[in-house]
Length: 371
Image (cartoon, rainbow, N blue to C red; front, side):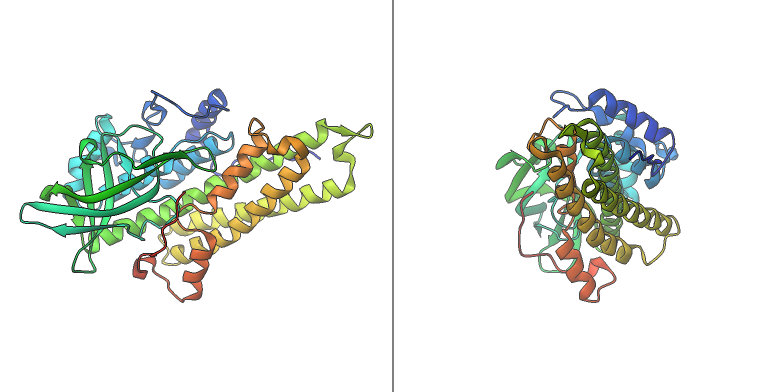
C-alpha cells in the first residue's frame, strides 16, 4: 500500500511554499507575524510593470498546494488573488493601489463572507453629496492577519450597479464578533451602520466592477479546488501511513482487506478530483467561456469526494480521528470547510440547474450564512 503523489502544480513556487509549510506545520496562528507578505506572495499576480512578479494563477495555485498539503492555514486566496484582481477593476485603481501592495506598504483584506459567492454582495451603498454611506452586514469574513486597507463590494442604492470600495483600516468598523472557523481560521463579522466614506473610496462601478468580481470569483473557486485536491492527497497519504503503522490482533491495519478497499476508494476519488482541477486550469489558461460552468460542476463533485474521504479517514483513524493534534483530522476539517467556501455545492448546483451560465446574472442570496 505505497502510493506516490506527483505535485498538481510543480515548480519553484510550490517548493518554496512546501518548505515554509514544513517549518510551520501544526502552527495554529501567526500572531504578530505576516508570513504572506514576508514571503512576497501578494506580488504573484501583480504585473512586472508595477513591481510585481508577473506570475499566473497557476503560480499562486502552487503556493496554495504547498500550504494545504501540510495543513497550514493562511488567507493566501483572499490576500494574493481576490484583492489584487479586484484592485485591477479600473486603470486608476490599478496604478494607485498595486504599487503600494508590491512595496508592502499596503496590506489588503477582502471584506466578503467566506461562505458566499463574491457576487452575492452583502453591502448597500447610498450616494451622498460628499461621498457614500455603506450599510449592511458581512458575516464570516477572514480575519487572520492585520491589514492597512480593505476592499469590498456594495450594491449601489437605486440601481443594479455594483461598486468596489477601498477603505483605510481606521474607517472599517471594529468586528461585531470574532471566532474560529471549522478549519481553524480566525473569522469575524463586520456590521456597517450607515458608515460614511469619501467619494474616492469607490474605485470602480458598473460593468468594470462586475467583471472584476466575476474574475475574482472564478479565481477563488479554482484556488479553493486546488486546496481541496491538495488536502485530499495529503489525507490519503496520512491514512495509508496510519494503517501501516497501527496494529490490531498483532497485525498491521493495512493487512485488512476491507480497509484496503476503503483506501482504494479514496485514491480513486482523489484522482478524479485531480483531473477536474487540471481540466479547469486548462480552461482558465485558454480563457474559455465554459470556465464558470466547469468550476461550478467541479465544486459539486469535489464536495462529494471531499466529504466521503474525510469521513472515511476519520473512521479509519479510530479514536485518533477526533484529535485535532492529528494531521488527518485537520485535513478532514479543512475538506469539510472547503465545501462552504465561496458558495456551497447546493448553491452552485441550484445555479447550474437554473440554466445560468454567467454568475453575474445572479441576485444576492437573502440567506446569510456564517463561516
